[in-house]
Image (cartoon, rainbow, N blue to C red; front, side, top):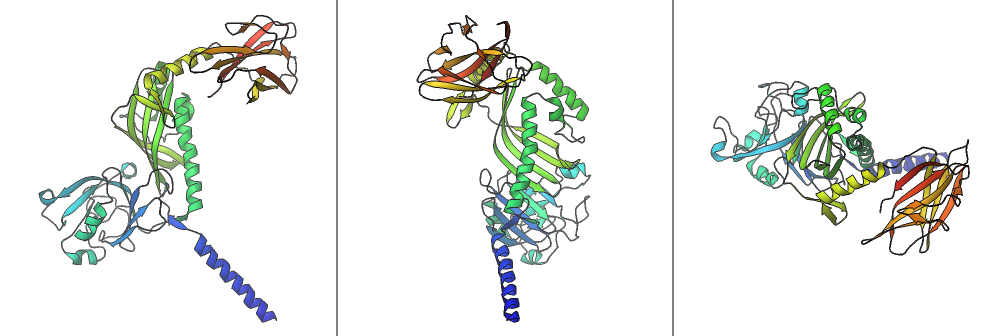
Amino acid sequence: MRNKLIRFIIFLLALGTFNSIVFSEKIPSCILNYKFGLEKHIIIVEKSTQKLYIYSNYNNKPVKTFGITTGKKDGQKYFEGDLKTPEGIYYFRRTLSGNELPKTDDYGEKAFTMNFPNPIDKLERRKGSGIWLHGAFDSNKVETANSSRGCVVMKNNDLNTVSKYVFLNDTPIFIYKKIKYSTVDEIKAKRDKFLSYFKKWKNSWEKKDLENYIDSYSSLFRYNKMNIDAFKQHKKRLNKIYKFIKVKLSDITLYSYNNYYYASFNQLYISDKNHFYSKKIQYWKTSEKRPKIAFETTLSKPQTNKIEISKGNYITINQYRRNILDEQKEKSFSIYPSNISINKIDKNSESIVLLLNNQTTKQRLKVIPVLLLKNSDTSIYKSINNVSLKNGVPQERENAIRLNNSKTKITIQTEEDYFINSVSLFVFDNNNNFKQILTYFIKK
């Protein structure tokens, strides 16, 4: 009986191990955009096995696998002529063929040049040039492991197949000593963590929150020969010039490699004075236990005069700019204290219900709410019963509603086919002395 129990326990353990192998799907940890954004193809080289893999960020298995050969010496490349293949994230810059290829060696029919040293290599003082992915007429060269002077070399026919997946300045090639793998959950958690820093950078830029914006950059960052302190002063001057800054991002692509991240995206920058549409590339290097921007560059794209404000809904950038400036103008007449806020708004066919939160304990304030309702043609003001309005301003105070110490529910009759543009609360004290106006702008 005891032996049967032991065998049963061993069977359960084995089954658990089997299940963990089956269900713990693992993919190369560099594919941070796994099942995220547009489908992209990624080339991954593993020096230890002398293999090249083509992956899609929507497939956990390689699309294609090829034999290759890399540098004669092992390890990370640090200087010209060390016969090592670099390790990191690289991009293909040019395609060379025919007479463009040097005659000093067997480069096959075609070569793709790589951007070694990349910005992280330069920060870490790695040097060199002429690192390519190229073919070879001599098949023995590829079949002999570690036989190149630093390039990644493969058979001509194999390179022709790989070429179908290569888009210059867009398709990455990751070069590892040994590929690192992660589960899908680990990659998603890592991506979400990175995106929290990425969103902080974008939001602080829009809010002109200079301290948090600059905190997203590494102390090693340089911009047009400016160090981080000069860059901060440059941004401070721009913040004073512009009344607002809006940054719309699209087509975000994310990768990671050891201690750094790569992000590329389309960026539409709009201020009250200008707008630019471009592709931005950033390298985020882990610093102070979190990633910070160590390098960024901007590539100009064909300019646009429209912006998508909701899915499939476009307006001109000039109209978008006027809308923001009009909203800022309205907001400039409002005061925002911390003691009163709108906790909830409910709308039905006949009325709008406001749930106000009052944190004031020393005095019992009173309010008259005024709604600004809009449709495509007109605007109207509405308030509680027995309160007349002139240009949206209450003409009497006697019917003001006293706020409770916690939450107060107020119902206002509404109109069909109108949406709420804003809610203004006219605030009075116990003696009906006017205190202030609070205006809350409601997203459509």
